[in-house]
Image (cartoon, helix red, strand yellow):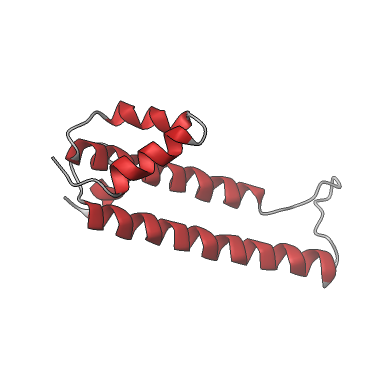
Length: 117
């Protein structure tokens, strides 16, 4: 399985180590991007004029943040589905993560700490 298929496809299986490695990598990349955006916004507000378009609207990093957030969520969903397949379960079982507190704990335990089937 190629890296592209691993990150964006919904078929296949991955083990716990690959799952954790990629989840941590995505988290670190998100953190680095958030740091860059934060520095850019800080520089715009406190070290110079606020960037405005000719029509007076603020030009921010919102679109870049949206793109990175959507990509990150898709990658994490893809990794979760592959890990669920490795556990012998359907990817639809990830919906349990929508239940506050219990669902998230259950999904992390099931995907991150239980051995594959």
